Length: 141
View 1 (cartoon, rainbow, N blue to C red):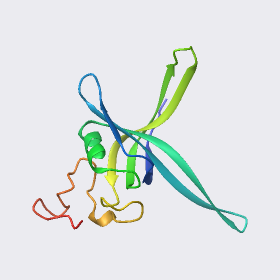
View 2 (cartoon, helix red, strand yellow):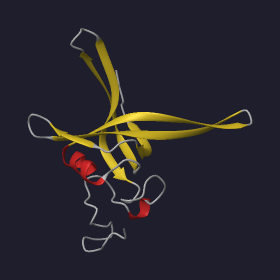
View 3 (spheres, one colour):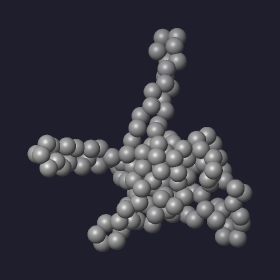
View 4 (cartoon, rainbow, N blue to C red):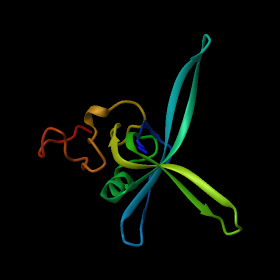
């Protein structure tokens, strides 16, 4: 039986990334993203917000921790993962989160939310001092 698990989200960070390390020393960043959805119900325009937890591993996770902050816009591509555990008092818990394979920074540092995709690094693995056009160009922010 075939299966497929792919998620693409574009939104704003709801909190600063928190970076931790696995016992093997791998960096793991976690942060929340709010995604707005506008829709029409009858003649009324409504808006709802979805909140999603994101987990990013490795160098990309380190870059997220270093260069992202609450309010910044990002495009996240990844997969859904459900974690299950049992609390100390025996209650079963579960959580669905997005394990990111790619995080693109959409708003420049110091600007939150809207626009700015032209001058931001392509992804979390690209250092911000490098522009798309070449290694010696400066990023205009």
